[in-house]
View 1 (cartoon, rainbow, N blue to C red):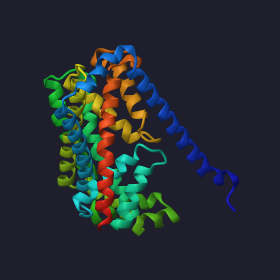
View 2: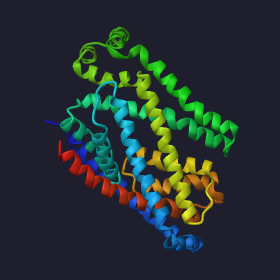
View 3: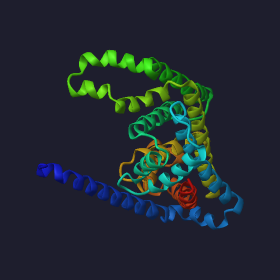
View 4: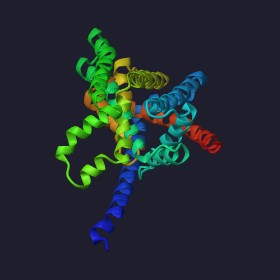
Amino acid sequence: MNPPNARRKPYLRLAAQGLGFVAGLVLLGWCVRAALSPENREQLSKLGDAPAWSVAALLGLSAASVALNGLAFWCALLPARRLHASDVIATNALATLLNYLPFKLSAISRVVIHNRRDRVPLLTIGGWFGAVLGVMVVSLAPLVAASLWRQGVDAAWWAIALFGPITAGGGLIALARPFAHERGLTRLHAILDPLAVGPLRRALRSERFAQLHAGVTMLADPRAVALGVAIRLADVATQTARFVLAAAILGIALPWDHAALVASSYFLISVVSPFGMLGTREAGTVWLAAALGLAGASDAATHPLVIVTLFITGTESVVLLAGAAWAVLWLRRG
């Protein structure tokens, strides 16, 4: 019989997810209230005068970002398994929409689709997601560091932005290669066997561990990592352009270097938020922008980027709803 504490843990986790989601809605309400403040009404009034082409371009940039993120997942898996790129993009579109919600529905949907539909083993999916995260870190960390350090676009910023991901990606490959493939798995066993006893040693030599180990092989593949870094940087450029365009529509001056940092924050918060990205992403981005004095403002409650983030979330949600509808139809065909 399970002890009472063990039986309560799932309910406690569900309650925490629900409370986190409610907190996100509260934060979203705060953002809406800030957007409607007298200080922001002038920018808000410009939404009705936005040219149709600019709104269409904003929708197109959101769609491009969804596609690029899907391609980032697709290329990471190439060393272990080749799926149809369109299937992975469709899965990403559906999962990104579900990321608005709590209970980790986004991650669950990815796992269920790729395991049941594409027959990718569960632990290989775990290694795959780890490889995607590793490439994301080496791609974005230099850009964020350059923006925080230089506080502007200059020669040093460009050097870090261009060569930082290349250098970090090369280091990631160098770390993974000695432990990749069958030879690397044998090397891992030689290192870990003396430290493991009983069930742990059997687990390390199991088929399940070999499936999880596929993530190391993905990170050791120069083509997959290089392509993944290139796609991730293209996505950063796309999301940065989205913020610059949205700010321009609202009559807000947002330099490209500030936009790159804001866009990266907006994306990273959506990735790490444990309760869904709705509200937490928008409020977190505005508070960070205010703390860093971006866009010439330091008061989060009246920061002009409140309207920008809500505008982007609104246009993105339209794209995601359409993309998810297409994804369901596309994935059901196979």
